[in-house]
Image 1 (cartoon, rainbow, N blue to C red):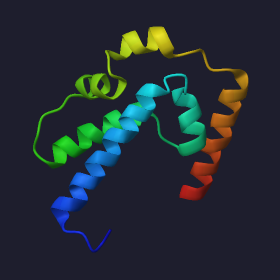
Image 2 (image 1 turned 90 degrees about the vertical axis):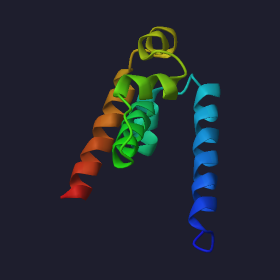
Image 3 (image 1 turned 60 degrees about the horizontal axis):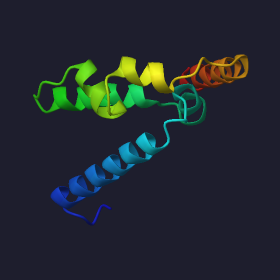
Length: 106
C-alpha cells in the first residue's frame, strides 16, 4: 500500500474499518473475551482507539459515544442482550494470553 497516496490509503483504511464494524455487528455471538484471547483486542479496545484517534486529530469524542458507535447501541443494552458470563475456560485462556503478553513485553 506504500504506492498509494495518503488520501487513497486513508479511504481504504476507513472502508476496511467500516467492514470490520459490520462484521462484528453481524457476529454479536463473538464475545469480547474471545476476541481478547485470540486477537488481543475487543470492541472496547476499538472504542478506546477511536477516542485516541479523535484526540490526535483535535476532535472531541467521549468513550461512551465511541462505544455506542462500535456496539451499534448503548453498551449497557448490548451487554444485557449479547454478553454472556465468561466461562472458567475463557478466563483461564485469557490469563494465559495476558501472561504471554507480559512475558513478551519484558
